[in-house]
Amino acid sequence: MVESKASSSAELGLSTSIMSRTAAVAQVASAYAAKESSTVADILELVDGLSRALYLAEQGAQTQVPAQPEVAHPPKAAVPAVAIEDAVQDDKVVCLCCGQSFTMLKRHLKAEHGLTEDEYRKMFSLPASFPLVAPAYSARKAEYAKQAGLGKHDRRT
Image 1: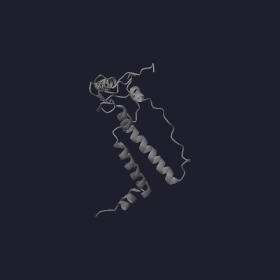
Image 2: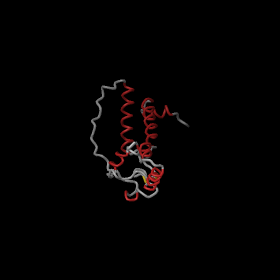
Image 3: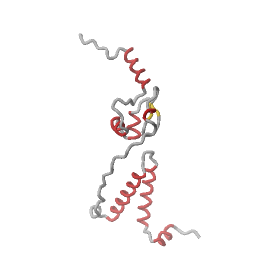
Image 4: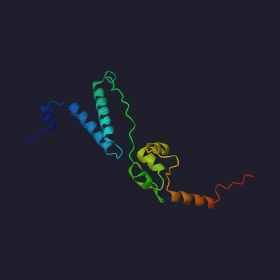
């Protein structure tokens, strides 16, 4: 009663190479889709590119099939996870990409979103003066530096 995959794929007219190629693309795409930052457009582009590359590799004619023309997409308008007005609180700053709260955003932006501070500010049209460190933390560090005598250099000696 139980049919093997080989006989059912033969009935459908699918070769094993097509099935293995499809399975490989599906496995990579599902792993990529698990990323929080992946979009539907990114996943579809990945599937298309992988399918094409695997087909070409299988055919052994990587340069014979013309590449699809690149279509310039307008930059996506970034939608903040929280209101920009609510992103900076006294003891924390909230990431506009994902909504998580931090004392400092720099490391999070690079590690989780692959963004520099300038790219992050441009993405959400923030001014250069927009704080990426919690104000209370900055004040505490500044006070400590003053108490330690940092920044007081006697230039006469």
